[in-house]
Amino acid sequence: MAESVHTARWVSQIADQGWDIHLFPSVNCGIVHPGLRNITVHNMFRGRQTIDPSIRHKGIPVFNDDVALAGGIALERFFPQLKVRKLRRLVHRIQPDIIHSMEIQHAGYLTLEAMKGIKGRIPTWIVTSWGSDISLFGRLEAHKERLREVLSSCDYLCCDCRRDISPAVSLGFKGVVLPVMPGGGGLDMEMCARSRQPGRVSERRIIMLKGYQGWSGRALVGLRALERCADVLKGFEVFLYSASPEVLIAAELFSESTGVPVTIVPPLTSHSEMLVYYGKARISIGVSVSDGATNSLLESMAMGSFPIQSWTACADEWIEDGKTGLLVPPDDPDVVEKAIRRALTDDELVNVAAESNYRMAQERLDQSLLKPKAVNIYRYVAEHYASR
Image 1: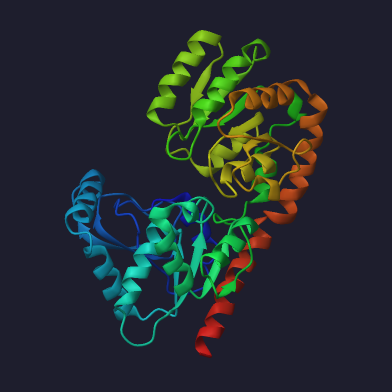
Image 2: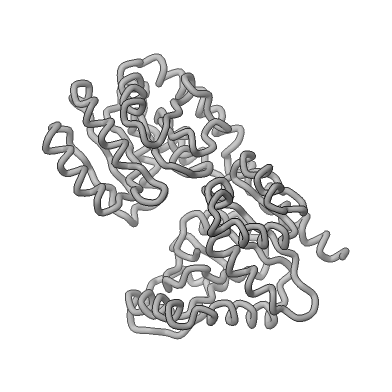
């Protein structure tokens, strides 16, 4: 997904290696994330977006970004096989050593169909599982068969959670499991340290709430739980980000009924700005029926914000429930309320957790450690490709 911050952060780990990197968008929105560098992007249409000069942006030029988005959507709707054929032609033309599908339900399925028609030597195929790709979709009948095809056809699997490895094997994966690491790469821990509000976390008066609501997100449960905590929210402010339209309405009503101010974080807020918000927050709430090692969880840990996360993500691979965070069910506002109350009233809990979580981030999230790990993944795969 060329517009995704996760894609941009992953690619940034390998963009300075002098490799010829091509990005084929699995979703045709015509947009390139501003964090991408040293890469060729193959969009169907490209608008007037200002991008880094190191990017070679391919595609039919149109007069603005909205037209690029609409054109891509229209082509996918009326000519669903066009993207498959375009990717297949690109693979024939550039003859890549490695194909890496970042995410499965769009990129993985697309690559699977394109690979079926490739003649000659088939490139080595890495699949990265994002979030719910295996843990949720692997249990749905509409996806099981295609997931089996992807996982039984690819050569390497990279997951952001150890949780996903066993289900992937059950679904037919027989290749090599690569090191588990965050799908968005690591964090600049020096920048994180600079962006943290000085003083104890217990003195902070901001609450971060992830605003996704839909097939997975349950932001409305988080808002309902916060509403029940109105008696202990005096002096606090809720920062709502990535909010769905219905959540924006509910947030306005929440603020009106409780008197607690809500700040809506703009959709295109930069990664560095988000770190500053986390660095001012006492707690961070993320509620969903399924997810992986979410950026919001990892960034809150690095910035000292106490995480309250649904147990349907793999947060238990990062935090200890009751000590360095609180794990909650995604659809029970009663339990979420109790967790929020505890995090708002137990100063020692959030202060001690902040220190432990920061050490964990230094050990497992520092980009200076994860970048060489990502580079070595491609080197390892390329060496084995050359020896086939």
